[in-house]
Length: 265
Image 1: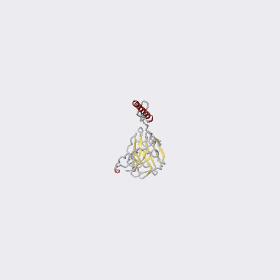
Image 2 (image 1 turned 120 degrees about the vertical axis):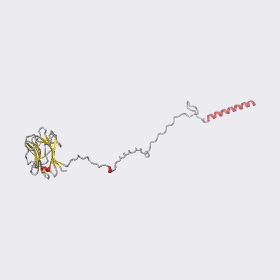
Image 3 (image 1 turned 135 degrees about the horizontal axis):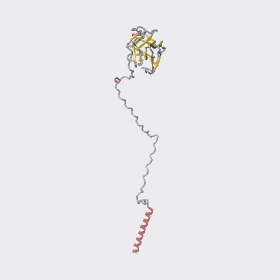
């Protein structure tokens, strides 16, 4: 009895312990879940990190404007000397001339002038042989023997001559056929009695040595432009008003250019 009792009691205790084990496994929640295939039990699976949330678009009402680049700084002005040290602004000046000149004949006759000629001469305007001394044209005497001239009278564009003025014209004597005498004559108040000459005294108009025929020396050089000047006092023209002029030769050939007056000093 005692032996069976001990045996039966041991079996009963063993059965009770097995039931308790089965009850515990079937009803209790495991402490740790099994991992997936290949993952050690008890460790969470390795997972990719969650992507960062996309940035929200900016709110137009609160978005600050893009900063503008800073404006370029204006270059600093160059230092200027004090006003008193700066020279005044002036336009380039034309070359100075001795006295003031009035041109009466240049590329044509003054208004109202009537052309005339004698001794086989004529008014002939040329642009070459020789080239003009100034302007675009010169006028030329024909080659002829003895006295010959071209002249004009009646100009309404007159020339007023003042005290101290000098009358002038440019002349070119033909080097191959130079004249023996060159004479200039001026017309005022219906009179031609105002003459100057260079070279021989071959033209006998007026009285030699007076304002009606005044010698001013030898002939000018041939083959180049030479300026002839006559003091108005020597030919009686101070204070006179001119309306005509004559270009006179004795023999030979010449060309003439710009004519007028230069004011006295």
